[in-house]
Length: 370
Image (tube, rainbow, N blue to C red; front, side, top):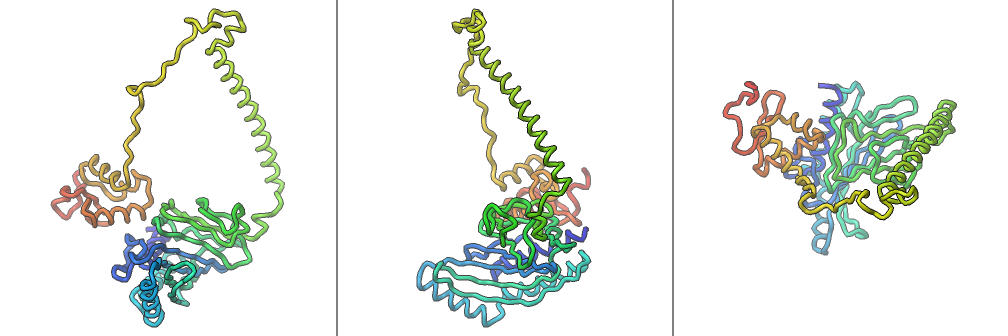
């Protein structure tokens, strides 16, 4: 198992425990969800030049009545005065995460400066719970660069009610963000933004999201000699492309004119009056329409895959076939198992996924004879 894979698993375990409700807050990556009593969750990551980052997890609950507001005030007071299970899970998972990260990445990590708060925001009619800690050496550091990537080796998955916000408290600027963020602190300018935001539902590929900080000159500096040469070459290529496009367009117009009979009229041909020399084009009928493929949701797609493979598949094969991230597939299968649609059997280091009623009879691998 690679160093980054273990670190990534730890990230998912941490976020899963932070987002889980007190009744189900466990170190289970399949529980990456917002607690039932809350409406949305924001994962806010504030980056520093030394590679450390403050992780802040914010849960929001809408408050529609005065009674709900008073109840949340009581909940907030208890949350701040006592170490609730939700907060204890944060501390335990963060400390475990940094221990694993130290061993597997070679960067000395530590979790400290734990803080918590809760309260009512009257202006927005909602209650808020915040938990945070400082994650030392969270990101990779190079000469005048800070890069977030290796902790997301297996990708990342945000549910529909979640957001991930990257901020920084440095003299640097954002120089790269992949994939393209859903919003920037300063629209149309990555370098001028103090924050970038990704909004769920969204599934990231391996090593994504990728966020990079660098000196302002790397984002706004003058072109180098090599960059100028490349730009000139690109301009010449664009001119050549435009010429080819114009020739193709003229050919299309000429062909259309000939087929319509206009060319025949100019040349004195027999097709000028739209006679037999002009081919007619019939309108498509309902019988010739191409039927759209059936649109399947994620659950139905997994079930169809299992049916096409004799009722059982390895989880890794589902990941490869669907091209979804490992974390998304893991969470989706766990939800389907809870609903009774499928079952999961751990065999060695693999999960065997079966349709209901197609489970293996023995504990050995059902694929040993294949």
